[in-house]
Length: 628
Image (cartoon, rainbow, N blue to C red; front, side, top):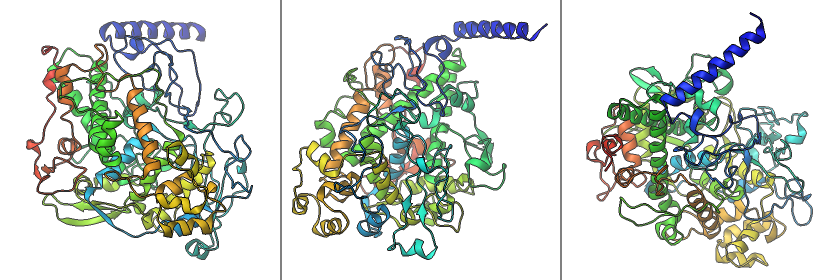
C-alpha cells in the first residue's frame, strides 16, 4: 500500500470516528460548535469565514460565534477596542511623546518620584481582592508579545545592558541618574518588548493607527483554565468523565506538568514543579498558582458529581456542563462579590452592571449591538491601577488563624513548587482570606523585584512598566479622559486640584511640561477615590464602561434567560449561592473554616464558620431526572 492510500484511509477512519462521536455525544464540539479549528497562540488573526451554529449550547473556546451578528467580536488573538483614538507620536505606531515633540518624562523616574512605598492596610478588605482581580484581568486581557509572553525576545540583558538586535520591537526603559539602586548595579535599562499589533501580524490592518492584539478572548469565560484554542484545550483534558488532567502528589490533585518546565519556569530540572493551564502566567506568582489550582479542582469536582447524577452523560457533555457551571461561578463571584468593592454597589446598580432581583430571576439584558471587546484603556490603563495594591509578601496562616510566616513573592516568580510544600497551599488560601489588602501605593517588591530571574537578582518596576506600556499603546492622555468622563478638562496645573492633592500636583509639574502630557495611568492613579469605591472618577468611568460591556455583550452571561444556552430558574438560584469562600472550602487540601465573605475581613458580622455552614450549590438540579 502506497503512502497516498494510507493517508486516504486515515482520513476516512477519522471522519467515521467523528460521526460516531457526534452521534453518541451530541454536544461534542466536532458536531455543535459550527466553526473551523481555532488558530494557535502564535497564529494571530488567522481569520477564517465563520459559520455559526445558533443552536450550540456552549460557548466556543476562542470567543467566536458568541455574537451571531458579528462572529469575530471578542475573538482571541484579535484587536483590542478603544474609547478614544490613539495618540501615537507619528500618528501611526510610535510611542506617545510630549506635545512639545520631546520624549515624555522617564517612567522609572515618575515611579520613584510619585508612587511611594508606604504600607497602609485596608483593614476591611482581604488580599483575595487583589488576587481575584489578577485572575479576571488575565481572563479577559493578555497583551500579545511582551516580556512575560512565551515568545519573548530580549531587549535588555539580565544584568541591565542593551541588546543591539531586535531594536524595532524594543522600547527600552532607560535607567535615570536618580535611580541609585540600579545605577549602583551598573544597569542601563529595564527590558521592554513592544506589544504585537495588527500591522505586525497583518491582522486585518487597513492602514492608519495600529491596534494592539489581545491574546485571549474578551469574555469572562475561564479561559485562564480552559485555554483559547482547541490545541491548548486538548492538552489539558483527560477525555474521560469530563475531567481535566491532574498530577497526583501526596494525595492531592495538582495542575498538570508543563512539558517545557526548564524553559517556562525558573527551575533547574524537568522534574521540578511547573504547571500547564490555559494561562501562560499560571507559574508567575504563588497566589495565581493557588487560585488556578482551586479552579481546576472545582471543575473536576463538578464533573464527578454530574457523572454520579447522570451516568449516561458522555465525556463531552460532562466537560461542557462542568465548564458552564464554573464559568457562571466566576461571573457571579466577580460581579456580585468583588466588583461592588472595586466599583461601588450603588454605582453598579445605577449603571446596570448588577441587578437586585430574586435568586431565581433571570436578567435579560444581552445586547448584540454591544461589543464586549476588551478596551485598550482598561487593560493598559485603568485596571493596572490595582497593581498599586499588589502585596510583596503572602502570609501563611494556620487553621486557627495564626501567622506562621510569609512568602516573598519575588523569590518565587515562575517557581510554583512552593505552594506544594508542607501545608503551604491551605495556609496561602487562608492568607488570601485574612491578610489585609494594602492601600494604593507601590510595594517595594513591585517597584524593584518583579520578574527577576533568580533569588539574588534585581527585577523590573511594575509601575514604570505600566506607564511605559501606556505609551507603547499610544493611549490618550489623562486630560483627554477627564473630558471624556464628564470632568472639567484641565487648562493649567491648578485645575487638577479638584481630584488630586497639592503635593502630587507639584510632583507632576516637576516632571511634565504641561497638564496635557500627563499619562492616563499616572493622573488616574493619583486621584482621590470616589466614596465607596477603590478608584478615582476617571478610572471608575473606564472600569464601569468595560464591565458593562463585558456583561451586556456576552450572549452566554450566566443571568441571561435563553432556553438553549441559559440556566433554568432552579439552577440559577443555585449558581447565585456560589462564593469565593465556598470554593476555598471545597477545593483546599484540608481547609475546615472560612468567613462567608472572603473579600471582606473577619469581623463580628463576617465571622469564621465551619465550611459546612456556608451555602453550597445543589447539583441535583442538573440531574436529567430533575427538570422542574
